[in-house]
Length: 269
Image (cartoon, rainbow, N blue to C red; front, side, top):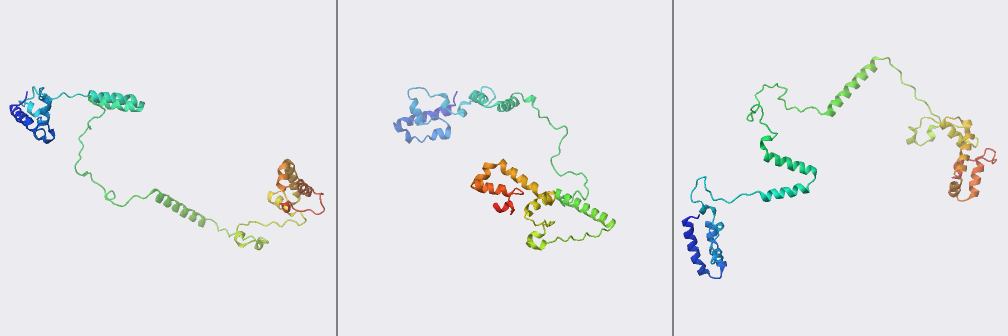
């Protein structure tokens, strides 16, 4: 089972066991490192028993180099199969399907979904198909925004042509708004109209009616709506004004025949 040369080397190493004695650290394990044979420190453990065959390297156990009768170690996948089985139990359904598909590719390789290409594919060299000069150009393609800008520019030019062909309309004269200069300059451009209501003590209500499109003479309806608002939220307004006396004074001022001197509601706030 073992080459005679290897046995002779083991005998020489066995003689050095008595030389090293009880100090295995001075062995150096040169025989194990260079020849794959048990060194003196290993052989000291086998003084009473036989030397196991596994301690000799495979090279010294192959007495001939044919394909028959090789004394090789048995290869097993039992540990790997057990690990895969445990992992299969731990993963979710998606992981189990993936793991099973991988194992089927190994076990049933003839059922693999991969097929060779129907025709031989040339992987070397550039295609020899004739190309136009425009296809060989290095100019980049326009972006989407450039297409959109070009489209709008064409639309704008067409609109200008249509307007120029139509009949000329003179510009509308600028409308003069009275009392516009009384407002600050930065807000004058945002004012479309100024309505000068009648000054009779009810101008605040008349302004609200004019803005609502009800006409200036409907100012009494605004007073009535305010009276209803105060009656609906009586306690809230009393807490807001601080006392019942001030609340009653405000409510009475909203009546048309309440006080001789009628004032606007905003004066009480």
